[in-house]
Image 1 (cartoon, helix red, strand yellow):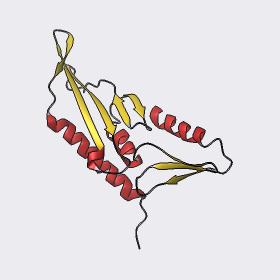
Image 2 (image 1 turned 45 degrees about the vertical axis):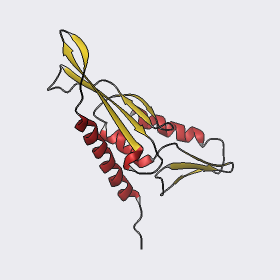
Image 3 (image 1 turned 90 degrees about the vertical axis):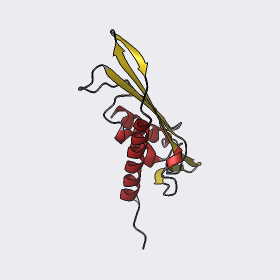
Image 4 (image 1 turned 180 degrees about the horizontal axis):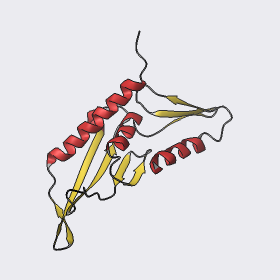
Length: 150
């Protein structure tokens, strides 16, 4: 929720310099542009991917989220059923277009051994499943906001 508030504040502050500003969606890239008398500035990442990442990772507290650079870093997260295991996720949005190769998900895992956290191997399918979930949610968001063609 803090991240969404920060994004809204950034957009509002960016629009403050003009008396004739408005937000305009870019249906090709899914990004949000800020238009004013001085020109148009586009956010750095695909908004469908950005919002779908936040939705998909909403169960993990965020350590950092940069909508202009396209990087989301979570805090360490332990599920209630596995308190001796934790994970951390870093997502890189690499493109303004909604494409599978425009997203990179890196998962880190640690297990508690003798009271100390130690790095552990992560199944490659973990990041694949997260990537698939993010892309599926991004497509849902795009379909929900794209006007039907006549």
